[in-house]
Image (tube, rainbow, N blue to C red; front, side, top):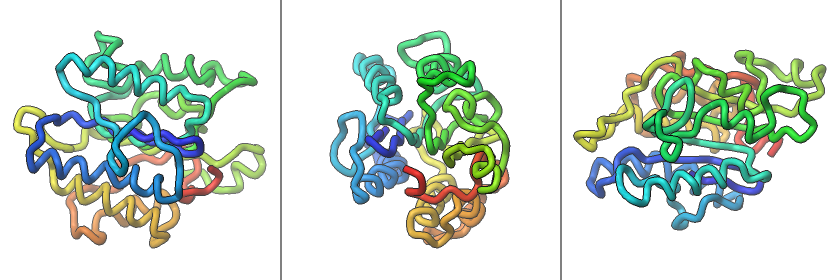
Length: 243
């Protein structure tokens, strides 16, 4: 995960063996950190330069990693998040029965003072992309203090007097990889990197358009359907816009 004073992003790696497939998965997520550090932006939690923060899987370090994630997520300066890993429509993590390895959606809303709405000390995020199963089906946009409506244009924010923000999530269970086999779906790997290139390079500066054109980009064609991703909030959010 990476979280900065202006931008907050996260990466969770469910594959922990250092093999070729795992390294490929890491390159997919490390790009988010590298682009933020280039701006430059401060990245949280502590991590190696150019590498996304990784959570250990099923070992003694795992609970400490999740605690580091919580602290970074709820840091008052965090405003953006990229997460890749286990989760669902009710939270982030691999085991909803274990609070040391799972962050419930409800907890996020309480910690950020976004639920119920209207609180004066709310901590709204600017950009969140949860690269995990059915992340668009829950109430994550509300929990992160965003407008829970799809594909809004600038006029909505102008008349509402709100800052631009966008939440990206899947309305399916994306084939990211297999834990048991420590393998990565190359098409998914390509799609995420194509999206990041489109968005950060300005080739397609709108977050929705960057996703729409990620099926065939610099890394080649993928079988990922961009329409299985939902954008709540400002569809035309730029990479560093309103940070």
